[in-house]
Length: 272
Image (cartoon, rainbow, N blue to C red; front, side, top):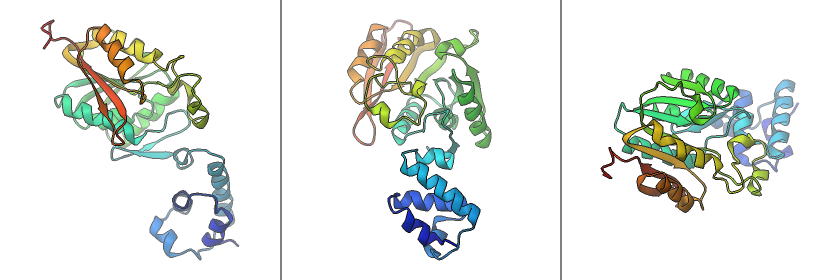
């Protein structure tokens, strides 16, 4: 029967860390045990499962989907191919929101996917989260239950998900689709839901809709916070300015890439 070491030799093309994480997951042990006991014998079911996962990973399927989970802002979240895999750069949006919005205030998150942003924000804020996909909402709700977060979830297309009688929010936050529909990067993201990635010829179709609709749902002085592509900051700022937002600014992620643009809804027309 095969050992851990023999299985790794068979799958040398697999990234070493990926191999260790797959082994740890299938064998239900810590990574330290994998490193300490390469001579461990694999049962037939273990070997079959590991080989299946290794082949899928070598074919390009993201590790998060193989493991069924992804870390984001200190939370381990369930993910499936119904939702976008949360990225570290999106933590920039979370950090900005927690810095700018007073604790306890109400926030609307549009397009929640796995619930990553909503769950992170619920540490300090009152969160309503929406998504058009029933499958995504089921995952987000399960993640919220796992992490004991009280979040109001609504199903629907952007603001259409709201009941219409909600009081205005202190902020609208979103990581919407923002890749141009013909961009070659989409080919590299083929395992993830296209509806969560692509947004029209220039990638800004959904951002246009969010910017245009946010003012009706914000308190005076409330904030709009949007993640976007590395080359879209100027376009997003122009859209915000055209709708009357003020104090518009772009913030970079840890890699120094323009990642999140924010704008403030006028405070009773004072311009402050």
